[in-house]
Image 1 (cartoon, rainbow, N blue to C red):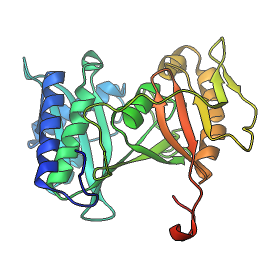
Image 2 (tube, rainbow, N blue to C red):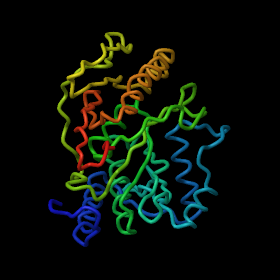
Image 3 (cartoon, rainbow, N blue to C red):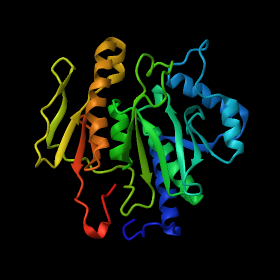
Length: 303
């Protein structure tokens, strides 16, 4: 979509969004469709419970009645159904947010373990992009756990979303499998749907992995803090474990140490407006680059 003017939704952009979403769904072997009945919403909630390890005797984070209310308000509720047998293997929920008329927040997207790694999550996000653009929306936000490497790679590199803020214990205590016993730190990302040259077609470029190392993974999986970066450094690297979710099961104390170590490194870095997180490498590294200095014409510091 080269030459696409920023700030404007055109027929070509809508056609591109539709073809990209269709290609992603075909590649994943799913059909992405709206959740319209209470039965469908109940099935989606069951998917979320399985993804987040919520047992039948525990309180679900998302209830069918809530989805019914969100759907009644015109918000985004969809399921990913396997093309061969029609089984629901993923779902996504988003709602309109400020600035009203141009943005929505993607609250939850989940894919069953047996369908993971097949592109179902990508199919849901590209469909979400198409749906938003068709309604005049140009920005989608969501949060993710910055210690989950596969999500960081998917959000920042494959989708090309931008890491905007680090929120400490964003949701407070949560009693589900991935979050139980861990502070719920989150990175908020913004997906600018009209940014020039963005988003890429189904996958973004792999970031170059070089720079001053602020945090790395030790021989036994422990966090190792690097020395403070020198004043002339313009690229920084922050490493995280390959699979923090497994670590939370077999070494919860070490996983909790990682939470606090990453918080003290990445949160401080993101609060410094002279740096911008620009990507995440498949090998487990966040990349941050120094922002260009503001000029007089800019009228002040850049975000």
